[in-house]
Image (tube, rainbow, N blue to C red; front, side):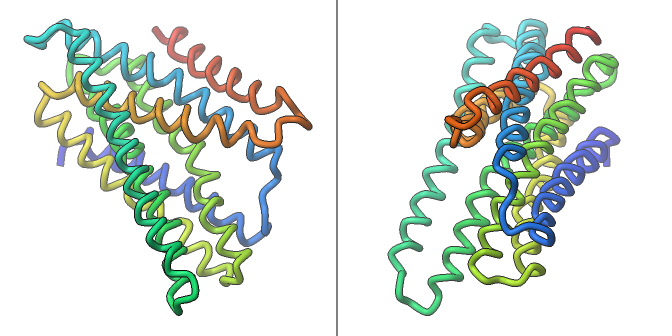
Length: 267
């Protein structure tokens, strides 16, 4: 197996591990601290937005200009929109099946359906996130392997990992509140992140062995990350903002600033 694919596997195993850490909070709490969770979600969204440009879109533009037969603006825009549409389609699929599960109220398998839908929802969202990490590491081809590109791939993985922590908790803690044991709640919570190493390997292999799709893959990952950040993380971190109106917002600004600082400094 190619070294870059192995590196992508290790990185996505790391993001899965963070999901497991988030799920492990069920051993200590029945509900997370809202302020800490909002700050973490805000920071993760800021990192993801910044990484979408400096670590994904900017390299995609450069690659498209250097080796694509199509205009760079077309390649990057098409990849970006497809990534966002992929995430949108995943969300619609989950909503459809969740609605069907809700219609089973009163049946003996109602609780099981709710568990399946909850885990499936987070799992589907983890597919493009794993692809984003795999693509970022797969892009470290020979001849373009620099400290800047390596840091870009690492920060994509860190950004995905940071937002995986509350996702793991978002599965395990509600299950615990519904009466499931800590062990079962943890197992269901961490299981939602297992798809990321698989998606990461697929993303890395596609980029490594089919180099012509690299600009599309990078911009695809950026589109998926932007949709996740804007549609899910930012609204979630802004809940109950009346008590602390700028707390989560400063987390977004801080996350964006840290990511921008790392990329520009290493550039």
